[in-house]
Length: 318
Image (cartoon, rainbow, N blue to C red; front, side, top):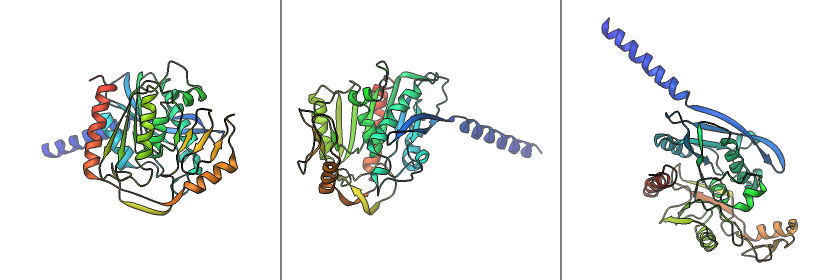
């Protein structure tokens, strides 16, 4: 009987523990936009045990959507460090499951806006330390993590002057949009790239990092040799019809016009007005089909340690 009682007690304790763990998650929603129209975006907060206020890390997924192997795993690592993990879902509220074969289904501009609106929403949550909110992301989400450091986009999103991300960690972003003398917030940026990435390519990001640094931005880049796109986890993949923009780089010029690097086509005039026909022509000239990626165990392990060290230094003050 005593053994039976102990067994029952153990089961009850386990249930309580599971229940407590489940209660450490919370779903929030905030307004963003979908091609100019308002839309409610959701994010799941994974809370650490501390009562707060606690630092937070926004985690933004890529073109394949949220997966437990990537966003879930990184969220658990952040929580273990005492950091609230805020996993944005930019797809489900828009009725989208993937943008691999059609990046226009959720535009990069809307992804960037989601990242900034998430920061604004977290400012209203008392349990979060508003001065210590970071952002990281993967691929398309890595791009939004990078662009959330740009004052040009922050101002356009209407973010108040006192509210900025404390750090930015873009994993293998697409650096296809490059500002002339970009004005960044001064928060540290740590860009993690795959040396064998054929989906977005490492070179455009290395080039843009030099531009950001020359303009006074705080940015470091680490390239993991032989690591493909998505080196941090998941399974190897190849999508023959996937849109590949690794050769597309649109750069702002001194006169504020925008030019696609490969074709030399002006896609936006110096007056700031887009030239739709030219944009279509430029993308047709540089876009190819076929995307691939997959894990690299050595890069996955090292990038996790690199991320955690960066978080300790710049978010936790360690």
